[in-house]
Image (cartoon, rainbow, N blue to C red; front, side, top):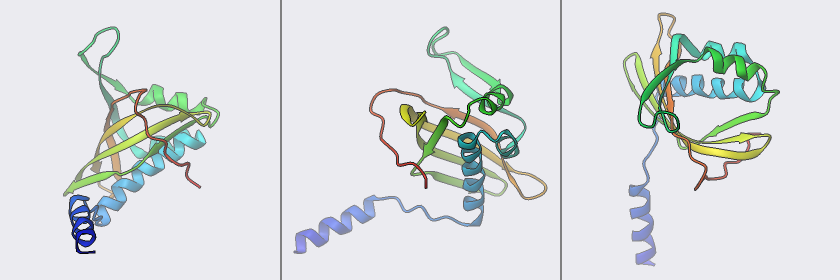
Length: 156
């Protein structure tokens, strides 16, 4: 019994605690609204999550491997409008860090198309708090892989 209690205590200490203060919760709510907008093909909801001039940052893997590139989010948001509610990016185990009016989120995800798992990876999302006190996404980067993906339950 003593060994079981010690093992349980070690497991608890090794598991990061995700304490969330109000700013962490608000930053995460912005991210969740963006993905809800993606799921429901609501471009207005998605657009509202982003700051003007927001961008994707990526590292090329095909035509120019290793080259860092940036793209505005506008084309992606337009694509959401034509997705017919077929896209579902499910995030889990999010880690949010906040200092003043800047926040950073690290969110593992699984991306589903027509309820079929297509790829997975991690999103790195930068947010800033605007003059109204709202958190806005300024940059989103992600990894994408097709192997070793974890099934993530659909939200109710």
